[in-house]
Image 1 (cartoon, one colour):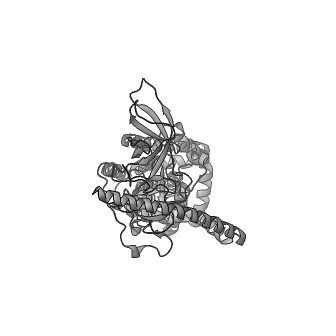
Image 2 (cartoon, helix red, strand yellow; image 1 turned 90 degrees about the vertical axis):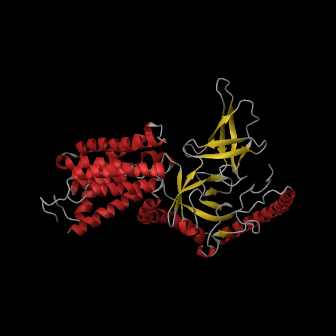
Image 3 (tube, chains in turn purple, brown; image 1 turned 180 degrees about the vertical axis):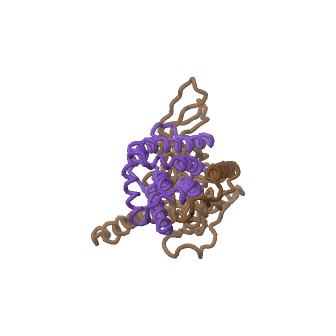
Length: 162
Length: 309
């Protein structure tokens, strides 16, 4: 049973990484949602006992490697975001999709801010408001992501609370 | 499945530990850059992702080659033959110039110039951070790629390798905000440094005094001063000079000659300090281009043209 969940989580995170590095047309690059963060948030909400901050940290490190960023930049952001999701998962789960999307927006914003802060310290922060666009697109896409992920979980894994 | 009360360290504790570890990692990576092994290990996990993402594009190129008609192939073949003839003629001239240059250098008892080894690498079609100018190449440590290695395309210098993995490597383009390349103006020999701006269409030349002899259309070539890029490769063309007398220096912009956002293939160059190791590990066949002076393949224009300074 747990193996199924593990399979589902690995598969979706793999797909999220694919979407994160898939080439997009020039105009769409800045609008690319932060797929990995969204998927990890979902799993932290759905399976809080199994997907915790450690998984988030590892996913963040992988993001750093794939982005050529400083090691630990995305990892730090993801750990803090997933920590919040983890302690609030019971409230988040009963919220409506719209309310969830609003919370997701602020969570993604927090992550972007942490990453921006680190880039600023290192000395190459982007100087454009478009930098925060992934938070908007991520929040807008959240209802669909949530439904699709829930279906995947039901197909591949099993539904459980703990 | 875990029971409710058996849970190891609490989530808050784990979070704090991981935050501290992230901060340590970031400091170590930024200050000392000793984390190449960690990066390398993690990149093994990422390799399948990159492979799968790149697959459709590779399939597209492959099918385009296999399915193109006989006629198109013939036409292309003829064009390439013409081009090869032209390049060969130019190369003969270069050959003579190089010989002459060598002789003159010997007369001056200057150090002889060594030729650079080159290897063609393909750009893996993945997008990384939209605010950094990184590309992923399909050649890695197994092919002898090293950190800091310059990459060029058919038109000019493209950038340098920043991370080397086993089967792939990440390169920073000259247009990245944290990149700078020592250049000199072809016409006058004036030296400067071209800074990346985060835009692929222009570089910034800083610290150029007002009385400098510099014109729009001047070609910038690599000066080789940082001992990272080989000398005399074309880098950029000066497109705009803004002489504002209120400023200390002239504001000069130059457009990179390399096709930073459209190239599909690039050349990895081994400079004389780093010789290309173990040729038997190379993939057999077409990819290696050794002794560029002998063959007509894929030589960057302008290479070894003058050598005079």
